[in-house]
Length: 607
Image (cartoon, rainbow, N blue to C red; front, side):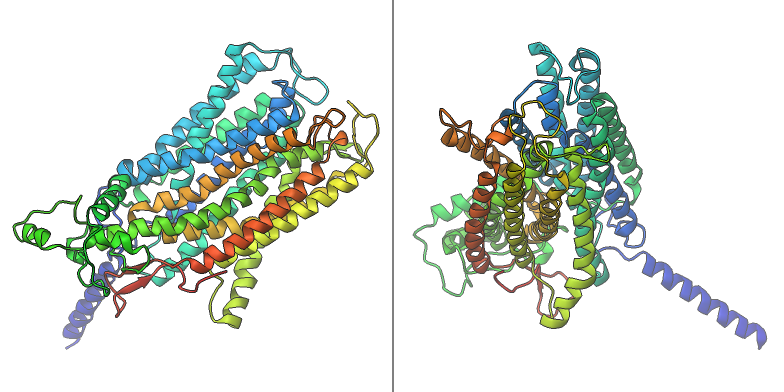
C-alpha cells in the first residue's frame, strides 16, 4: 500500500514537472522568432532580460553620440573658426541629417535586414566614424598644440583636413541615425503585448525607460566630457566616446541568443504603390456602402507576423483597390491573382494609416525646432553669461544636464503619480495624443522663459565687450528654468511620440513608425537653420548686425525666442484640430478577444 502511494505521488510529481515544463515552453503569440528562426519561447527569450541589455546599449551609445554633438557648436567656432550663426546652422544641418538617416535604417530593417542586423551594422559604422574623428582631431585639427579652448582658437586648416572632419562626423550621423529608430522598436519587440497583458504593460513602460536611458547616457557627456572639451581636450573627449560606442556594440552582440525577432516583410513602397495603382484603375467601379465587397485574406493565409487591420470609412477612394470585380473573381477561382489590380483591406488600411499619421507628424516638427535650441542657441546664450561660480568655470553645454535631470524627474512623476491620478479621475490614462499636446504647451512656456532670461541678460550686459570673460553679469544659472521646461516637455512629447508612432504603425512598418519620431527632430533642425537664416537676413541692417550676431550683446536673441513661442502656439492650435480628426488603428486579433478586434492605442479622439 505504501509503495502504491509512493508510485502515485511520483507520477503526480512527474505530471506537475511536465506541466511546468510545457508552461515554460509556451511560445509568444505575436509571431516573433528566436535566433534560429523558430517560434520564440516566452520563458527563454525577450522580456526585461533582453530589454535591459538594449537599454544599457542605448545609454552607452547616447553617451558616445552626445560626446560629439553636445559641444559641436564650440568645436566649429574654436577649432574650425566659424562664426556663431554659421556654426549654429551647421550643427542644425548635421543633427537633422542624423535623424534623416533614420528613414534609411527603418527602410532596410522593415524590408530586408530585420532590426537586429540593421542595429549591428549601423553601430559598427558609428564606431568607425568616431574612430576617424578621434584620429583626425589628434593628428590634424588641434594645430598649434594646445589650441581649441576659449582663449586659444586654432589656426586655418586645409581643405583636406576639413573634408576629413566632415566625413567623420557624417559617418557618425549615418551610424547613429540608422541605428536609433530600430533599437527603440527592437526593444519593444521583446514584449508580447498580444499574448500576455503583463508584457503589454511592460512594453508601455519600456518607452519611458528607453528615453530615460537616452538622457542618462548623455548626462556624462554633458558634464564630464563637456567640461574637458570646453577646456580644449577634444581628443580625450572623442576617444572616450569611441570607447563607449565600442562597449555598446559588444554588449548588444552579447544578447544575441536572448532576443526575439520579427521577420522583415518586404518593400513597403511596393505595397503602397500597388494600392494607389489599383485604386486608380478602379476609379469608376461602384462600391457597396457597407464594404461587404472588399477583399481580405483569412487569418490562416497571412504570414505569422501579420494581423489583419479592421476596415475604416475614411479615404474611401482607396477602398476601390480592395473591390473584387467579376473579372477578378473569375481569375481568383482559377488560382490567379494580380496584386496590382486587387489589394487586401489590410494593405489599403496600411496606406490610410500612414496618411492619417502624417498631419500629426507634421505638427511635431515645430516642437523639434524648440528642442534643437538646446544644442545651439542655448549654448551660445550661456557662453555670453557669467559662467564662473567661486572661481569654477561652468561649461555652457553642461547646462543641458538640467534638461536630463528634468526628464528623469518627470518620467518618475508621470509613471508614479500623474498616470495613476488620471486613472482614478478619468478611469483611463492620458492618450498619447493628449500627452503630446501637453508637451507643446510646456514648450511654449520654455521659449517664453528663454526670451525673458535674454531680456535680463542684455540688461546686465557689459558694454564694449568683444573678448571679455563674461559678456553679461547675469549668472548662467538663470538658464535653469528653460532647460527644466524643455525636459518636462520632452517627457510628454517624445515619449508620447515613441509610443504613438510605434503603436499606430502597421506590423510591417514598425521601424518606420519610430523613424517618423526621429525625422520630426531632423526636419526641426532644418527648419531651425532656415529660420535663423531668414531672421538674420531680415533683421540685419546697416547699423544693426541682426538678432543673432557674433556678439550677442549687440543683437536681440530674445525676439527670436518670442518668435518661436508664437509659432509654437499656432502649431498647437493646428495640432488640436488634427488630433480630434485622427482615428486609432484597430487590428483583428488572432486569439483572445471575443469580438476578434484588438485596439492599438486608445480610441478616444483629441487632445
